[in-house]
Length: 387
Image 1 (tube, rainbow, N blue to C red):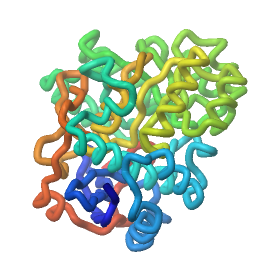
Image 2: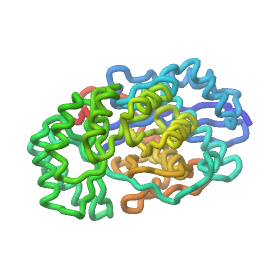
Image 3: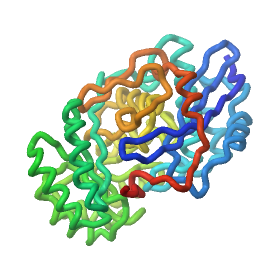
Image 4: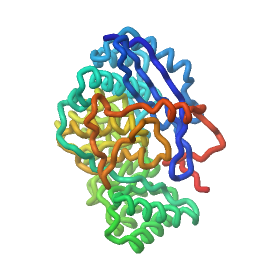
């Protein structure tokens, strides 16, 4: 079997917050009639340097055409000659680059083909299934304006009705507003809502984070995420020695993961398929296991294809140390598959179909086709803009 053709489609999907996310959907066709699906997800953070679609397509074709999709280690070796900034070295926040996300799309499409070729789920190529569900949490973006209080609380009301009761909250734009919001959350919902994590987004000097932690710990949470400036692993270690919550940081490359291990910086590695694909991220998981560090699965909020790749990763892992983050199919109004990956309350149900277990909806894909970037729309996540 050989890879014979590539189709790359740019799309836009709407989030519940009102912002729009851009994605590239990859179809990897073979000479035996099988097509693997991949996703280059949620590219909004690159709005000043969005990838050129024709250039990306040409680059992918030069690397993958004529190759055996089962020979995925060789594929990554070839990709590393052109996409230097993934796995060998990478940023911690955000834990991906355009190069690493392109590699991830190729990688997951290969796993999808492999599974379809033999009628087995992708997790069987990662060591087999250890669990049927992945525990997850829903993101709440930070309060910046008065209208954000009621909006966030309204989201929680809606989500509780769907059986979703575990959340993580982005903090740090204004700690006074964060304290007011979290107090309102506890007053309104009490123990019906579980707060997994506060995400500090690598915005703050570690002493400022520590002061904020002392102010906010009354609201009850398990984890603090990205608590110090980028690559300040010594600062993270200082925080870790002084707090009760677990410290988590994105582990995006072997070099960065080793630096965190040596510094004693974290309790949990946050790993994501977007760091280059299932093959490299599985190596980071193994490094964590050997070092006595817990793991959770992070996200940039993928559609169902990318979320399925994360679910197969989680299904293959011996342990998950905290609830994970991929809930994009709950966050987006639209998707590109005939049946979205399934959620059961606070859990993703791991797909058991061949490959990633997702079937492309060609009509939906075409209806969502759009340019990758629009400058006059709100960003999301760390750059979320209030209405």
